[in-house]
Length: 268
Image (tube, rainbow, N blue to C red; front, side, top):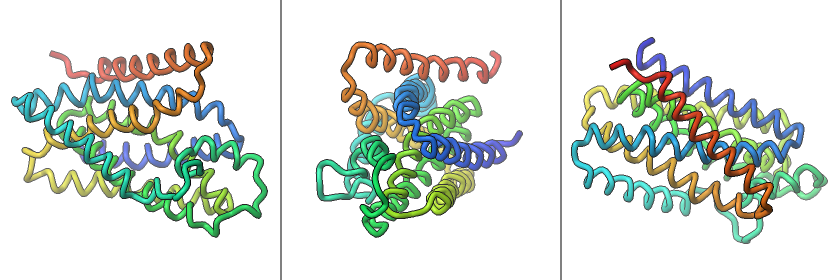
């Protein structure tokens, strides 16, 4: 299968599957499942960053200091983007935008007269569309460096998209949208992953020298999302049994990325 075919299949299929899976979890109010997926996603993101994307970027760049600088720049960049993009925009500390899982618990029992005329939902969709576009760029860059790297990067991104899409879905419902509208908006937003992937593929045909830097940014994105957005939520459950479950699922996420990398590695 060609590189372009891999990019199209993973971005289109991955986006659709993550939205449908998140919708199924949301409609069944499986908040505990979302919690488990978050722990797994942390392991998948960290595994893909440290076991695949970063080593590949270092190998291609031949300049470790420059590449680690790119990763540091990427972490700062994603911090700034998270500050600016509207998916985190609200004026109170406790709101469904800052805490999707808190919003999930509220949405499962809240009456529909507590909507915000769709403001939170539209802000979430704007931010999520941009986020999906960036994911498409990172997936395409990974595939253009190596098919095996593209596969494990896609697995990690899809893993963290499911709990994120579940939170987005619940915020749309809490903003007054119907289930059908929430599903449609999330599916439309996921198309941005395909657009980002295809645009990157055609642009990088003549700019292969950018691939190492994009891989460094991919590693930075995965590290930032795991450490800044996902891990803090796990500390809200400090009980020993919850901690053991979290550690086990993070380890499972890392192991699955390592296994996928081993299965799809090129023979030497």
